[in-house]
Image (cartoon, rainbow, N blue to C red):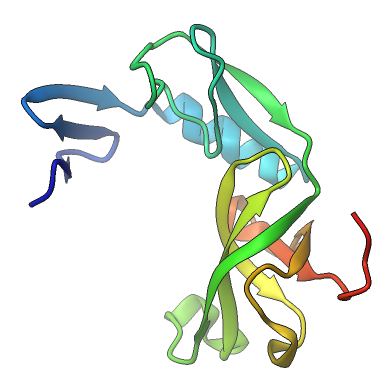
Length: 157
C-alpha cells in the first residue's frame, strides 16, 4: 500500500489513513441528500471550506485539504468542462443495458471540480481535451441524471 489508503467501514463512514495520521470522516446523509435534490432540480451543489476556501463536488462534510469540518453548501455554476478521460461501456449493469454501448468519462468543470458522468455524442468524435456541456437526463433521478454533451470542435469558450 502507498501512503494513502481508504477503508470503507460503514455506509457513511470512511477511515482515512495518511502516513501515521489517522482520521475518521463521517459523510452524513444530509450531504448526499442535498446533492441528489440539487441534481433532480437541474443544478449542481458542492461544499466550500470556510477555513481554506477549497471547493468540493460532490459535497464533503470535511475539507480534504485542511481537514476542517467547517464547510458550507454552494451552488456550482459551471456549465462547460473538458473531457479528461473516458471509456466505452459495452457490458452494462442491468439498469443501463438499454444504453450499451455508452461512454463514461471524467470531466473537469470550468470551476476546477471533476465529475464522472455519461458522455453523450458520437463516440467517433471522442478525444481527450474535448469540450463538453453539462446536461441532465429528464427520465432519471439522482446523480445518474448527470450527462455531458460533446461540443463541436469549433466551439469557442
